[in-house]
Length: 392
Ligand SMILES: Cc1cc2nc3c(=O)[nH]c(=O)nc-3n(C[C@H](O)[C@H](O)[C@H](O)COP(=O)(O)OP(=O)(O)OC[C@H]3O[C@@H](n4cnc5c(N)ncnc54)[C@H](O)[C@@H]3O)c2cc1C
Image (tube, rainbow, N blue to C red; front, side, top):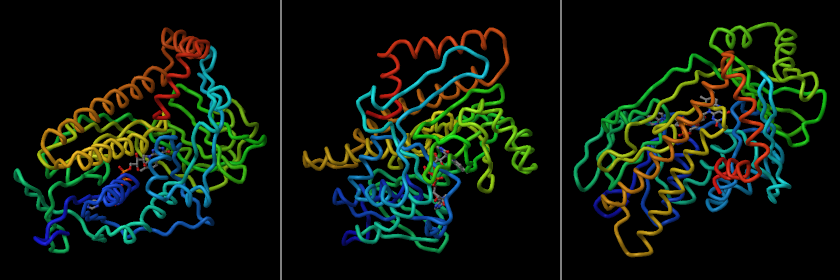
């Protein structure tokens, strides 16, 4: 905080995106405060988080720069070296292989709780002022800065506010930014499973008429499933008998790893699109799920959010290097335009893939398996698809 009691930036939301942004700005020499509604839960290896991410290489570079990636890898991160995507309705599949792409791995499977825990531990060390538990209850802003009101009766003044408070973002609402919403009528069913055959570092995604099933390789020979299903089917499978679940899951996976057996609790979350109509209103910037909630089929939820952060940190670094204001209106606008354009394309692309593959329509089923096969046979196209997902 400067002598007039004002921060350079207040970040609202202490998820992966908000904390990464707060740490990156602190490292760039800004005075930063972070507001989080819930006390963070300490991660323990004995209690794996059901929410896992296929973490992309560019975001590992970001976390490395923030000095947390080494610790995350030492605790628990499973590299994956191959990925196979195919359609239950037939046709050829699409395959990615780290060797062919001359990479040590395609990415890592990492638990959400581990990432938040290791990021959170850095906040105090890096001089970020933390207000937790505290919720945002109001926002005022003018051409010079923002004033954020909290439910503990306090206020925070800053040059900019960053909304990283998730899909139901309160700060986005206070800033008056509306969203384009669509309920996919699906739930994402998540759990850990054991497989008859070893996963050998391979991620699988099979498109089924109800939605895609992803099998993500984890440590200790387990895999994590993210199974997108029509709401009613997901509820039935979430609560139903375990042997029936194992049977249905093995069938849905086409037994790509042999028989699958549930090895954890099951959880389900609603799948919807929420795309903010803008990523900036005055001096408030939207990042992560506050700006874009996407379908999980491409495993890009948290990756897109961290790309908002990286782009913003590049802009701050550029301003500092040139001796300019990091919060100049034109700079904020450039960042917001570029990120919104990238996020809109990604959100709508994932949605189109979900719509094309999650049905039994004859024309659609005829064309889509071929589409994967064609992409697979053209190395340049396959490599470009992977580079886009990997953020490199
Ligand atoms: C159960 C579940 C499973 C998922 N599985 C996957 C998956 O397998 N793969 C994938 O890519 N994505 C998955 N996602 C999506 C992924 O979790 C999000 O894309 C990612 O968490 C977005 O990060 P974020 O930091 O922007 O938001 P969040 O992780 O939502 O963090 C927002 C933070 O803001 C805080 N907050 C909220 N309101 C306020 C307020 N008013 N004041 C202060 N703080 C506030 C919250 O407590 C929270 O800590 C899943 C989501 C859920 C819910």
